[in-house]
Image 1 (cartoon, rainbow, N blue to C red):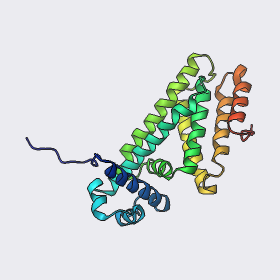
Image 2 (cartoon, rainbow, N blue to C red; image 1 turned 60 degrees about the vertical axis):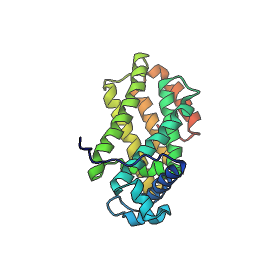
Image 3 (cartoon, rainbow, N blue to C red; image 1 turned 90 degrees about the vertical axis):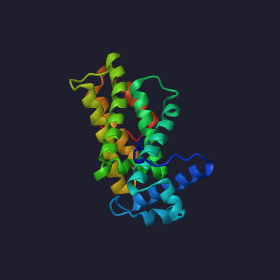
Image 4 (cartoon, helix red, strand yellow; image 1 turned 180 degrees about the horizontal axis):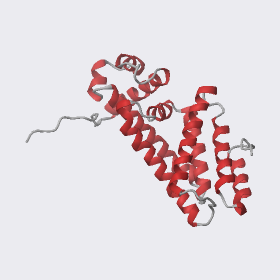
Length: 226
């Protein structure tokens, strides 16, 4: 039987291999922060990673494979932060707010998360991975909004899946605008305002003030705009 051609990166079986993969992912993330995906070269990535050309090609056969690995690692790091972020919260909306704050913090401090989210905007051959990435986000947000709706907290004629997609797109836009204007120094402002707009527009009136108080407490008083 003829074996199918390998199209994905090799899985590191030893600690040294995993360390090399991590070096390449970190180095490539730094390159993609400075250059557009289309402009970055494998030579740039090799230099930033501090690995030999042979080592890089052993683990990754193309720039696309490296970019896809960054997107996957970004997912891994965000999802690893979800449980700690929501550990003290049972309410679905407060969980969503806590997760969004955690991602804001990761975007400010983690170059792999920044690069992965930027790459997931969907350029050329990365578009399929981008679509899956956003579909996963929308589905996860939708599950929590659905519980909020079943608990009688929502007051909106917009379907839950549309509300979910709107929140994901608002977060993505806030990230991009904050990146462009202040290198994300004010991203918390954008995201806390996003939540206040959502609370005013979609939460049942009897529960709005409670959620606004939680929001202001969680985001350190940034959420002041009506």
